[in-house]
Image 1 (cartoon, rainbow, N blue to C red):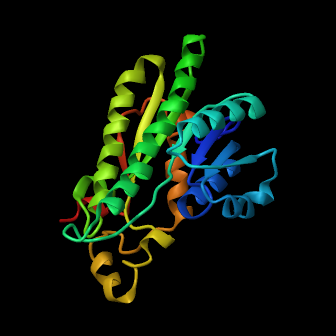
Image 2: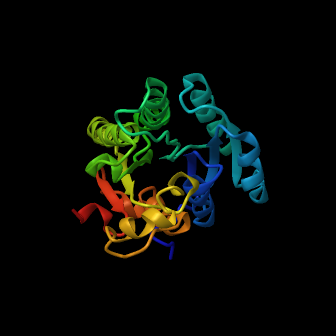
Image 3: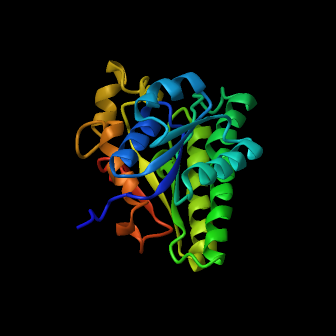
Length: 257
């Protein structure tokens, strides 16, 4: 019997795939049977990190997720080389931390550009393809998972740009779920808490560590490998009746005051 969370025969685009969460998502998707188009702006890190899989499982695309032409080309090449496209793990993101009173316009805009506009560009490009499949008679064209954050639903300290962008990602999710539900396209968000990546290195330092751990009911930070299975679940057939949701994969962080 096929595993209910299997991604066998599915073709997935993963953005921000070179390291951290994106790399873990790619690794898990491949382990569950998917073929992956891995996207990242850092070509060397992308190819070095995923070279072990070979072209049969992973194809690497280096470029900027805010570039509409690049993203559209990734969709075209993925379909041409793998024969289909069934989903998107919309994960690419950056941080540019500063207190509100000190944040400059460049810090604000760079995070909005990548984390929100880039997420829209990728969602739109993949969505166009999935809607086209539906109009051609495919009853199950595919699914999209947008990576948001608890910063987007409870606020954050020193990263108002990131919190605003991740709130916006949840808006993308709900709007796309409403528009594309009639095509049987599922769109959901996952909201991570504190994951052990380079992006959270500062707040995991000794002087902040205990303060943050006290706000997590499970009492520990998560690893990218730990959150990947739950995230990829929303691309599987087992999640076929779930759409428009914001799912916390955060050890309970979002429920604490």
